[in-house]
Length: 444
Image 1 (spheres, helix red, strand yellow):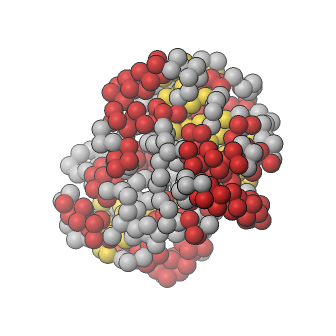
Image 2 (tube, one colour; image 1 turned 90 degrees about the vertical axis):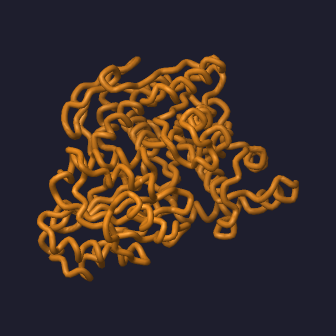
Image 3 (cartoon, one colour; image 1 turned 45 degrees about the horizontal axis):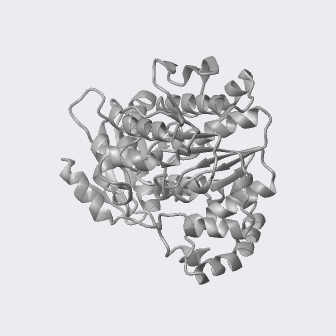
């Protein structure tokens, strides 16, 4: 698969449809919940898949991107695709990929290959339902070959991937709304009225039913990890989440209402169990609860940065405790966008930044200098620089030892968080001289 990495984003589906048709059109046999949006689509997909598993169905989940292991992308009943099956299906696809290129349709991208593997594996395993997360955008994303999803979900819309999707919320919303199918059902958690109006217009033009999920009308928070949900065909009170951060309340409600809108029979107790047991790496993941607290979050745009800031204040008292930020950004994202909400100062819910360590992930990095310049441009003083994410983690832990009750936060990219697996954190703690025997790593 490494040979395909040089072929990046190639929006449009003629090539991918040809590839799938040549291997028996597995996508046409799947009953799918299709999930797109700027922020929260991974968590929403995970909640939906967990609800369906709790109802007793065999469920495929295609998530994008992964955090720690490539195989996180393709799961059946919560288990990653085995390495042997992944390798076997890639091998089976190779001659078909060559045929597609020979037909003049161009080279299959890495994302298309992974998506094809996912669809073939789901078909092999005869899943009852599949929850499929959009990769980029929606209208021209490879996953949009799915012909008739049971429900299309648009989580929220913010500024991201502007070079591909447009530089306004309306333009981006139009791309996200591209997954809505004629006569279908769309459930959306869009908060801003401007992009919502775009999605509503697309739904109207395509004769699709549109359900909007809103705080206070569709769900209400009852505590840091507790909420109640009320929507068409569903009502659940006092649901407690394993996933941290109040931002997950909106995702849980959106997933539950989307499952209800899909028409799949699900008993009320399965909604509760599915929401309460859902887990996902890299989404406000508490790697270590104290001594110091270590939190990993894959936030990589302005909307995600705002959500992360609120979660840090709510869950970690980061407006009072000193925070060390480790930030590494991918090459297709603007570091100023993620840093702007995190470095907001002079307000009650601003986080208390003690230090920022700029670094860069090993894969597809934005130069560390860009992170430094963005931080300084936003008024932050001296910024520490570490060339590798692993060195940045050690540096953060060394700095943390000089502070009272600190919080170390690693963010900026899936790739940055993904380099810091539990064994890597164990090593970093040893290197920094932290007393790991007092508070062990949380490996749940």
